[in-house]
Length: 424
Image 1 (cartoon, rainbow, N blue to C red):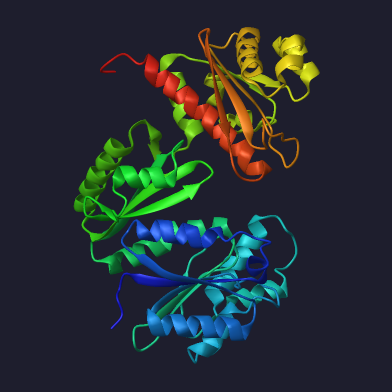
Image 2 (image 1 turned 180 degrees about the horizontal axis):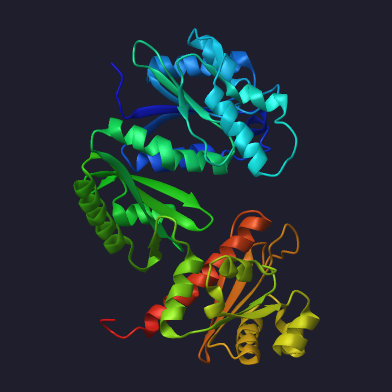
């Protein structure tokens, strides 16, 4: 007996297996269907061959009874999902005139001129008895096949934009009816500047749940996300349990918790600065503009970020930021005194209320016994009160640079918390 709220996903495409394309479709399906109580219990990626598609879908149907496939519905010779799954269900392919009409209208609306190519008409060949899943964004309609035992496979195109539109218009309503009024909800409390092991100590080294919900540790370059999951519960009950779990986690980890779910550190810092009328300028050496790029990825960042300097060469540090040549000679570019001067200099030259400076050794070479690869000095000047922080980050060049930018933003966040009035 299959569970109505469990689904398997089979993504189809050689480009996925070769790493040429990142499979965002499975992530989208898991997130959106999970929000309405549908659990993705297994994911598989297979090649563009009839045997691979048949084997993966047959096994998934035997386990779960409900499968979603993505990819292989286009008009070219390597698009095999439609005929392959028709054969698996013992159905003939028949021409659907409503799809032909829709394809011709879409072709004409895009100003292509001439007749619809014959290859596109292959998309109107559907398994006999299939339910059509409309595609408002593209030429390949989705299809749903159901057998006499209630097992079903829903075929979706691989283009992410098309899949997202079909998901909201057709799939979510169809699957919501199967979920029985329960939901699957998660919440991730985002932490930074604290090790996973230290978090485990604060939460209880052997603790696997919070407020009755399972707890997972998800480390990454931004820090460690602490995720709790409410499964097969009514929406109100799930929300209440997640709220309580978040409260308990925040109480345990304190200032290290900075946001939830997909909220990023740049979002947090920019929002706090905007609310208080603060402005930011950045001076970057080893990060080479990464900090500024992360801030400008956030819509509306121009309210806070004034600009800055990529002062990679020492001459630029002297000329643009007012760093002392004598201090550079005596202490080196990666030093407390230089980080402080960079932060003061960029704040003074831009008129910002907050200056952020990063100088370090991102590697893979350039380290010394006193200053190994990963050594970073961060300077933060808030209204003339400048402080510096030293850290040694692990990882490759990209990871060191990213972690330095995250730490710099976290230091700003904490400095702003210090300035908040009690009870604010």
